[in-house]
Length: 143
Image 1 (spheres, helix red, strand yellow):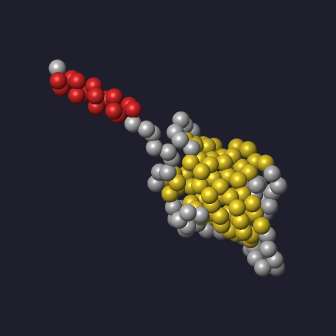
Image 2 (spheres, one colour):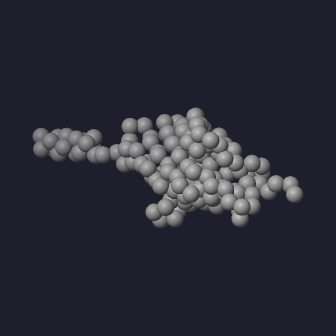
Image 3 (cartoon, one colour):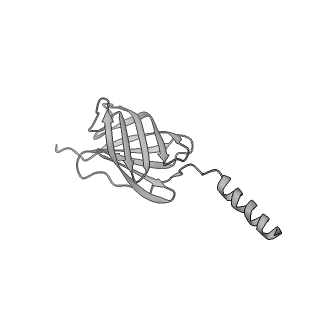
């Protein structure tokens, strides 16, 4: 009888344990696109490379696995082919990227992502918000 009580308590503890929020990990090195532009984003807090954004796709490292999320909705002025706000969704994961891209004369084939954040949600788990910043790199234009 006591063994049954211990089992019931253990089962209740497992069910009551909070679900961990999604974890955004560091991506390995990514290449410049063959054409067009992509944004390369680092977490402001610890300078980890956490995301690569191309028109139509967000690549992140989610729970230790490279994950590509397809763009579901984009709005805001586009700079270098990238929208200021884009919502991505795939297999129960939703990410919303808000970013400000600033072009400078001193940068050739790219721009600065001066202000950005990624909101990441998976199913009924907690949402995380990661402040990011970075650069936009473009395939070299013919000169």
